[in-house]
Length: 390
Image 1 (cartoon, rainbow, N blue to C red):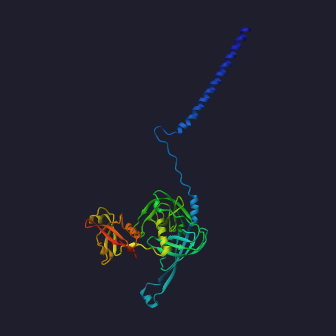
Image 2 (image 1 turned 60 degrees about the vertical axis):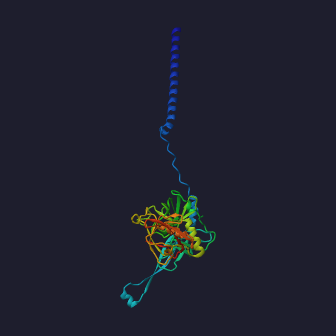
Image 3 (image 1 turned 180 degrees about the vertical axis):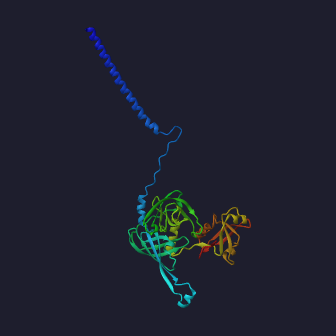
């Protein structure tokens, strides 16, 4: 009996040890699997060996604050003019009834920017000047829906700018920015009233180019190009940078359809400010020019015919006899390559340089004549109109 009992105890002890061993093995194996899972996730997310990790996605600047402040200084502008047209162009009718005139009201819509707390507003010339002649009636609608009559202080067709004045105090304004410091790909906001319906609309884009020249759009061309959405009715609105500063006045779009295609043009703020100050002071903008000449844009074909190195510069096609230009020695067929210390890129470039030159000064022109380079000194006179460019 003792032997059987002892044998039984040994069996029970052996089974107990075996059970404890199995339990311990299961615990250790479970911990190992947990450890493997824990270390697998980071390894799966890490970049493959030899390949750089992806950079974090850049975030846009928060422009909500500056947009909220700027929209209060952007206005809607309504210009109404009277257009008088003959009741009939039929000579028989006019013989019996005379030149009876038919009058109708024409209205243009646009945007404007309040630039002084006492009521000066900058907009585009084409927004306020009607096609019917005379002085149109202009109204400015503020962000708070007040509609105020506006006086036209002055207009400048060459820059397509106009300055208005409304009665008011402590009006919201947008601070001036330095447009010469704009960089390509810099964030900008365009604010205006597209189609005269969607007031205080804000669109976001970048500066696509600076110093842009678009032949035939304006006599004084030095546009900021942006892809911020600009549509009809945005003319005269604000282009502001990420610091909330006014860097341009939206002026035009370049489009084959008449709608937004990602090419908007704005007059730089430095030019706007200079023009505005002259209009407030004198009512007109005085610019320099060379009187008595007609200019033509260069082409590759013309450059080859005249022996010019490339299509830069501008061709003199006509010189009025007894003019200052003729007395200075300019001749038809001359190619103007330089103006003082600047190389002429094209026709619009020389017009800008002339406009900025002090009236009464003398400009040094580098010209190409019969394949040879020469220098001509020409007096800069006050412009009644810019030199004609064909």
